[in-house]
Structure formats: structure tokens, C-alpha cells
Image (cartoon, rainbow, N blue to C red; front, side, top):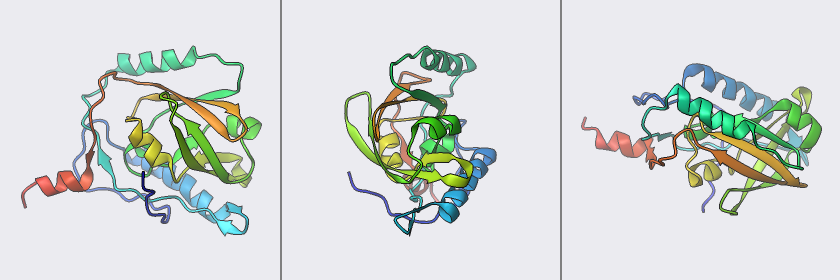
Length: 199
């Protein structure tokens, strides 16, 4: 699967109308702040790590009910393992446009590398995906940048799905996905949707 172009961390607002699963401004601002921190403060081998840019996609999934959101979270919360693990509810920005996946800070401080490097994610189908793990030392924060879009799209992640990240070995994470809606709908790329709308 081809890698996307690497660019700056700007999270641009889209003029395209989106459904209820689309990103809201507060989520974009949160991710943009994390991106700025990564761009300005993270260095590995004297090279500044940059976050990838990716064409936005638009969810075609039906609206998700509060009950479905809670059920996905409840299933993730009962996960147990002998290995360290953490969970994260997928936000629109992580699944549809900026593709910058922030990892809970406590898990980063206690279990993940305190330097930027490549990690391997194993999905539920036992397929490996390489991602750039970006570490922000002054905030003890970490996130997945380049490579996360391929993982997210390849596994049809959507807003309100829940991922459990299980650190099964050094630099290796198994990802368990708990979907808010079991029926998977194919994404539509923003540029394809725009082209289909007559001027």
C-alpha cells in the first residue's frame, strides 16, 4: 500500500458538507495543537518528525446511537491482558482527515518509547502495519502519524469506534477494534464526492 505524502501539521477546515460522523471544530483544534507540538519539539536523529497530510474522506455510515457508543466502550473496557494496554475512542479527526492518533499520556509515560521511532501495529486480521510514533518530551505525549491513515482506512475505523492498544512486545502493538456499528460502510473520498456534485 503506497505511503501518502509527508507534509506540515496544518488541519484545514473543509467546505464539504458532512454527515453526523464528521469532525467538529473542537476535535480539529485538539489535533492541530498536538501536531504543532510534534512539529516544533520532536527530534529524532537530528531530523524533525513531520505529520502526514491525507485527503479527507467522508463516512457513509448510518448515524450512531448513544446506546451503540456505550456498548462499544463497554466491550473495550472489559478487555483484559497480561500485557500493558490502553483504550482510545476514535475521533473524527483521527479517522477522516488529519489521521493523527493521540495515545493516552499515562500509557505513553509508563510503557511507550520516550523517543520518536517506527512501531508495528497488528490488526485483528493479524496484518502488520508500520506507523511513525511521534513522542513529545516536554508534554510526555505520544501519537501515531505517518502510517496511521493506512491502518485506519484499511480497517474501516469510524468515529466512536474504540481501539484497545495492547503492547505485546517492544515496538509491537496489537490493536483490538470494538465497532460502534457492526455494519461496515465503504468510505467516500472527499474529492470523489465533490466531483459528483454538479457546479
